[in-house]
Image 1 (tube, rainbow, N blue to C red):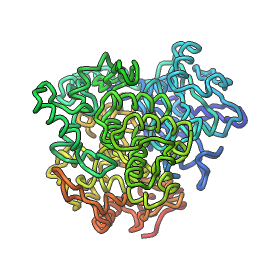
Image 2 (cartoon, one colour; image 1 turned 60 degrees about the vertical axis):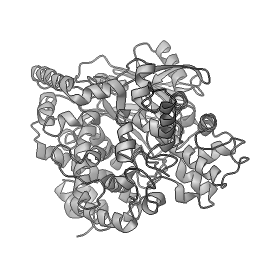
Image 3 (cartoon, helix red, strand yellow; image 1 turned 135 degrees about the horizontal axis):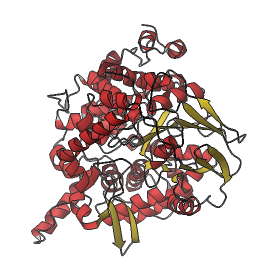
Image 4 (cartoon, one colour; image 1 turned 180 degrees about the vertical axis):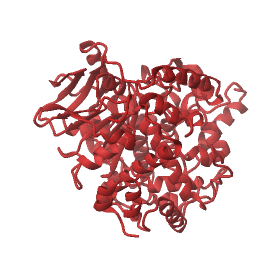
Length: 639
């Protein structure tokens, strides 16, 4: 290999059907072309999972790729990519986690772990350096993620873990993988492992990751640690977590989706707060799901991702009369929306319990919450009867009903569990009765906590996203909501013009973060210019900013090519009915929505910025320019 450090040059391949385990060389051109993380994962997914493969069949693979910086000591460089064909969307699947197991996998001597085939009986994958084996896991099957993790820590002390919960075992299409209380959440990775009867992975490495220029890297780590320490975003993240801007999203922007996206701010919660203040309870200045209220009250510590020097973790202890005593990482911003705003629930202890329960059962909090919100609207509209809801009073704000619904989803229990277990798209198809008009999803994936009717660039980002409604592939929500970021100035979130280049550029840049494994909460520090010196110190490769952006663009084009091969076209780059036809009714973004003709204009701009055809197909010329001749032959469009 041309590089001096950063890579072992090894792929660990495990076949669950045959039990065969082997080590293969990493292709020599991979480091320079793809860097690592999603770069490796996206390319391997395209190469190894054939078109039309059943996401829950033996041909699908789970390809686990730690980011290039994972295990090197670089601040916030903790993210490992889980790459797969998504059972939720049938499209490209990727989920990121600040996973200790990614670090241990690299220390064990592997750049990539490919899991293929299907086992007939439940198994664990055991990895300790060069010792790799499959272990019977019948005693683990049926356990929650927390129970499985606790058992594994006793049986395999010092090992990092990754487990699915009951939702994954029952093939819920919104099932997650828990990696030591960090979740690979979106797109159904837990169902992929469940279909393979792989309950979990335990891994420990004792090798020293090769570094090209260790002294230079040590100096850079110190330099960036000081930048992080003094940055204002660090204090806000550490004090209140990712939900720090929840109040601003509600009161200033009116783009916090509430009541299954019927509104853009949490009206009932703020009305309740005002009533309390009028009664003389002046100490209450925040709604209950706002971290400014709950973080100081419930936080007992932090459990940061590996190598994080700006930890947003708010580890909380809740002693609830209703839910008992439990400890969990405080709900992220997305979960405060999905189990709070979307359900019109401002009872923090119940929202926290739903978060805890989803993690234990192995359900994606975003998808699960949005699916329950859809069910609540269907119930209140009279489209879903109480009998069909298994006797639950499934009304907005009913936390007890939400808890029961969540349990049913994980186990596919009763009519309601079977209805909701696979996300909102399948639920609306099963129920019918016009419920698809308020089913919030893109390509089958439920949206995160940004009412894109009032954030036009993010509306485009949702529509074109290779994995469905997702905020992190572009990360453009900050630029849109604030109006500026890095090289961008004067961005108007309420206008649809000039969004194509903005979103394409953001996607390419964020692909670099996912390839290196750097957390996107540090994008206010590293930007693009911070990467070349770090890449060179780790690998010895001199890759400038322009080449890095080409790598990001290459990754995004391969992901799009994967979807094109699966039959996705422009028609799939669309938005939910509610976003296109129902304006936000009240608040700072009142009257805004994204009508189809406006979306069409943004799509034209985006495809033009990408160098794709008007139908959203990467052109042969673009793919050849990105040094992807085989993919150009496979799917490339003519000019």
